[in-house]
Amino acid sequence: EAEVAQSPRYKITEKSQAVAFWCDPISGHATLYWYRQILGQGPELLVQFQDESVVDDSQLPKDRFSAERLKGVDSTLKIQPAELGDSAMYLCASSFLRAETQYFGPGTRLLVL
Amino acid sequence: KQEVTQIPAALSVPEGENLVLNCSFTDSAIYNLQWFRQDPGKGLTSLLLIQSSQREQTSGRLNASLDKSSGRSTLYIAASQPGDSATYLCAVRTSNTGKLIFGQGTTLQVKP
Image 1 (cartoon, rainbow over the protein chains, first blue to last red):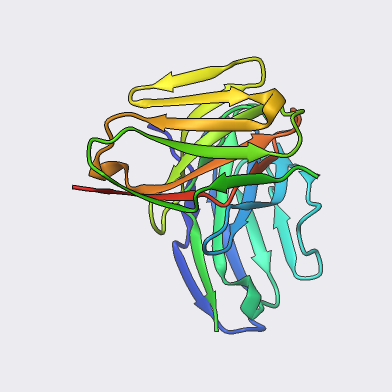
Image 2: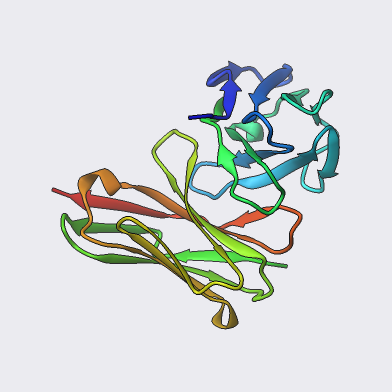
């Protein structure tokens, strides 16, 4: 069964350092999402791609976060510099069409010290 | 602004019991609604998706209903099992753009 892949699974970093997360969606899925989930809360959308284009980044803290999906397949989310408040689970999801079922990867757990 | 609320935040039941998880949303103009399961420290697994024109969806022991006019959805789990222990999240999609707005989840514990 096809799955969304994410790496790394866990990342520990010190504040002010740069971190990057990678996501490979299910093959053929044009829509890709990055969510942030703080412990005890539901996920919150950071950025949504349709192919290689950003369609929603209204909740992305653009002074420190960036995301790209250069060839419309895999995607990278970067934080520079990391802050203590960035400690969370970062989830990637994909869907064949925008309004259809979203399939989530296992997530990257980030701890900023 | 659409807000999604799930009550209760936590629930503990004995094995075999039928149970209902609740989800409410403030704006009834939704495109569809999706229920997810999340195991501790893991990603989300999609359980059911209900389109705005539908009243319910069923998958095995799970049944999700949708009442748009009252801004409510319920997830019914029949004959609960310890393996059902997880956090259940509902999320609404307000348009066909794809963005999901999540509730905070209900953490379910099913005791043997």
